[in-house]
Image 1 (tube, helix red, strand yellow):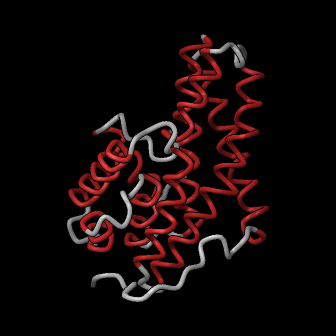
Image 2 (image 1 turned 180 degrees about the horizontal axis):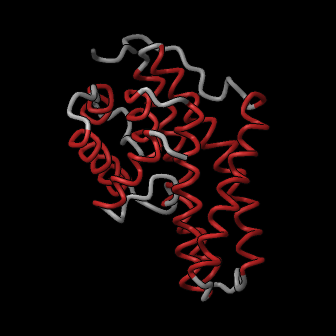
Length: 219
């Protein structure tokens, strides 16, 4: 992929290796499975990527990114906050709210430095009003919305980050050669994209529906 979404990810992770936009919510689970001996081979790693990782990335996180785009189109800040809390709920067992806030703020700061003209007032408002902490996935989706990246490219960038981060981690623990790890990342990034293309139009559209007053994004 050669799009603004991936360029943003490359830039962020060059400056801050701790910011893996799509990967950090999966790393804890992967590390636990490796430490407990449930993943000891490349075959078992690929089983983890196929399920549950693909299910989370395509059917949960991908759906959330689509919903953030729809909410941004409607300038609905409270809808974005609700989606953000949904994402947070999936990672709450692994990281506390403050850690999530710090990661999101770092991504927004780096994105604003790279693109000073971006209007990120909506996410600032979420944090200031304590409506939601602004997870990395939310920040990634909204920044790319402001950049004019397509929904698909934003999801692809998110999935690519997750796949590459997890495979790099596992490669060190499982002694997978760098060349094989690179090939594995390419293979599963492509598989994720194919799954997204096949399923995106059939994903539930009402998971995040909400109606509240005073919900508009600052302009």
